[in-house]
Length: 148
Image (cartoon, rainbow, N blue to C red; front, side, top):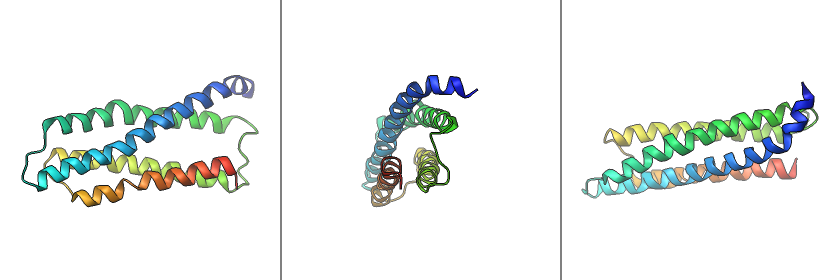
């Protein structure tokens, strides 16, 4: 079983990096769209229908598939023998960060539903939440590159 994993490892790693970049781009941009959506609603201006369409398409067509691809390719990498030493700290930090990122992803989806229903937090809340994926990314990348 492990022979085929070694053969596909470089392809899985390349696919993983591409999937993570796509997922992170969506996680950075979607809360920014929520800021615009919330602030237009608070100012008495009806949120443009285009914001809702952009949010929905970003979440469904880019963010969700990128998250799934990240998880599948990441688990493929983890299953490759000799790649991860679970006695080290870094894989646990990365795992916790990825689980946190997945939780943030689901928070974004819930917020999208609330915005579509007319309920919105203040724009400042979305601005603050927009920093969560950045902090998680710093922890994940540091763990993987430094391998502490």
